[in-house]
Length: 243
Ligand code: SF4
Image 1 (tube, rainbow, N blue to C red):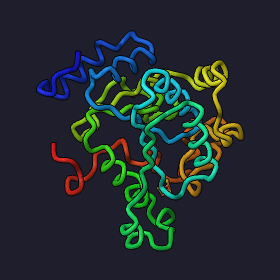
Image 2: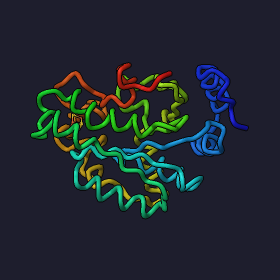
Image 3: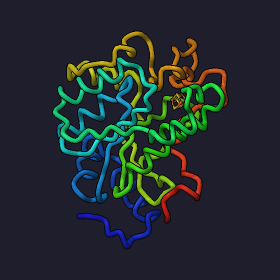
């Protein structure tokens, strides 16, 4: 049964966390996509382990909108992999989200903003177009995992996205080994860079192999304090959604 929008978001999230606490990822997804959580989108970077969640969703509801943020700075192999994975899985509603061309010309005309100010670059190329694409959705599904970094170690199952929507992380407690086994067991295509030792894959200028012994996301923006692109943080009030 759908949760009434009249229930405050915090209470809805509490109910969903309790209801889904002991369920498998597949059962959480099936229930979420049944209409209980309103209009739902899956957000995917088509990265190292994204295929697991994409596969689960494709088996439950292949028409689920999949939001793919193409910053225009991605590896060419990611773009090829996105096309191939969507074809293999039969996903029917892939939405490629790109930055605003006019804004790019004003704010990153030479394509080097990522060197001078990576936070501003992520905001321009990821956060702003992504939050526009989320308009009209009540809930989004993410592939974040607790093992990826210390900042994600206490990731909850359901959370408030800070912009009036619910966000669910069905694979939050899956290890890299478990994800790899799932990919192997289901004979799913792997991102070519994952095969070459990249456990977390973002834009080409900002993605490197992690130093051995460090966490999976340490190869993203190495040497900087930055470790998240910002789509999991609220937008500043001037451009954010009214709550
Ligand atoms: Fe820009 Fe790097 Fe962020 Fe991509 S990851 S949007 S290139 S700063």
